[in-house]
Image 1: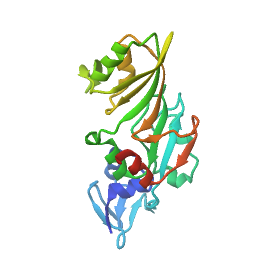
Image 2: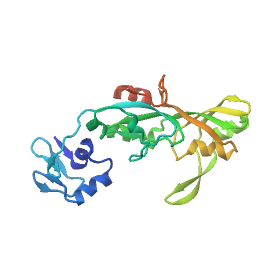
Image 3: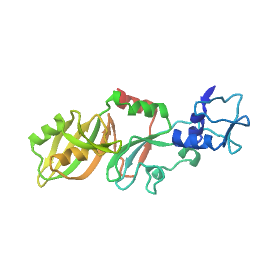
Image 4: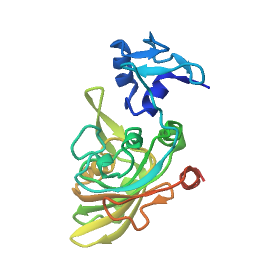
Length: 245
């Protein structure tokens, strides 16, 4: 069976991205049957060829894993950080090196995260064409009025940083339900896009600072009874059913 060298490196837990893989290739550390290769697109027949890094055979992980984590506030989705969410996952070290987070939540946000080593499923989930709804419970300062909720739902102008430049962006239509309101307001906001800190910015445009933000659902995939920091293993079939119907 033929696989691209990048796929083998990733499944062996050697790299997290194509950029990291290209560094290994450029350094001449990757060989196929003893011959140095430099192209990410190089295809390896794993039945007849042996791939090595630093002359040590690659040991790709064939097992695919699907995890739902309730990300706690104060953890990050950024690999390499001390508070990286994968440090919360207890599993075989070799397998753990192949895992990655699908999408992200801010450091000060909490809630549903999907973790896997299935690149094809991750690409499908993140595809903008799928328009997978993501639902958040948002506690904000002040009283949110029905008119403000309608404004959030119809789309508001927020500021985003794109390619190092600040630009104005109108959010897509969303859903906004006022769950409770007194001195503070608890909202349920559902969006089908994932711009950086989008829900926070949507609320702040209306003058309501976010106190707490929790993602409760991705599609129909919910936290169930998971407390912050807890995780469960699920199947690909369950994820596909709850995200794609």
